[in-house]
Image (cartoon, rainbow, N blue to C red; front, side):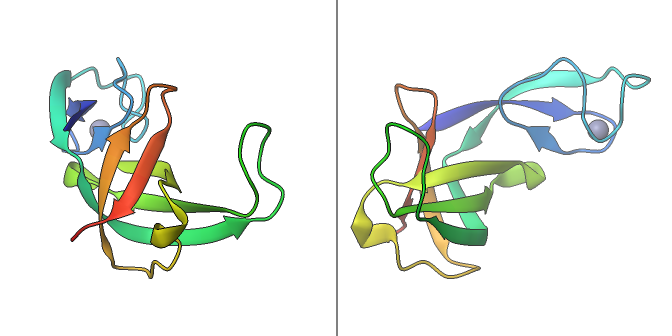
Length: 107
Ligand SMILES: [Zn+2]
């Protein structure tokens, strides 16, 4: 599954979700093109939320995941089987129907 993103022609970074302006280069540079990223990435950081937002069961594992072109997305775990992640682990990222990203450990 691919993830919609915008790629900055100035700094080469991608942002998710797609945007008209690059958050790294600012409004003076307007060089964004639509792109699609593979739903695969590497865990940059992770933590367990013991008081998650309404609609989630506690505890909830969340992870910052780096995709292609340095795009970073915040993901929640798809199942408790995926709670035991470490920084550097390879994960698969999918966008759920509620516009949230879910990660699962890549096999
Ligand atoms: Zn940029």
